[in-house]
Amino acid sequence: MRSAIIHKFFAFIILTYPIASIAFSCPFTTKWNVSVISGLRENLVVHIKSGDDDLGNHTIPYVGNYSWSFCEKVGGHTLFYAYFWWGSKFQSLDLFNKAISDKLILKADPEHCYWFVKPEGFFVNNIPSGGGQFIKGWN
Image 1 (spheres, rainbow, N blue to C red):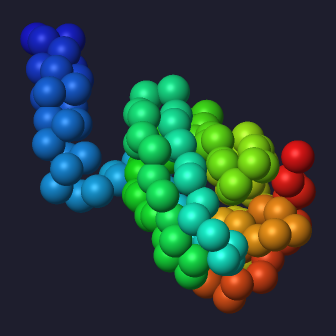
Image 2 (image 1 turned 180 degrees about the horizontal axis):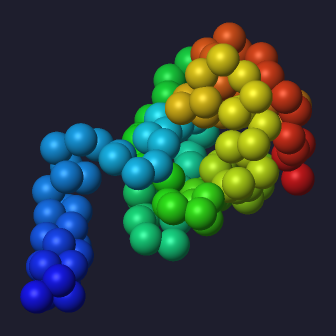
């Protein structure tokens, strides 16, 4: 009898998790909002992907941005990466992973990740200040 109740309880949790995820956003993990902001005078083309999602190609104009949100995977194994084209320059970069979230978690708003793309390279911050920590230059 007791085992039947436990099985029904776990079946209920498994069946209602997708509904709870939609209704409550991220019930078991952190919801992250990521933005890529261009500080380049010419258009920036970016293709963003994860293991689960292909967000496609996006052209970002000067001071424009592309943003998306997601629930971090349990255990911190979330990875979003991107390919960037600026004129003849190219760069690939992880936009979100455990190491990046650890850098941002020490700041005031751990659920925000802002990437600033400038002529010198790529900067990350948890506030939309236009600055941040330098991560990588252009190839």
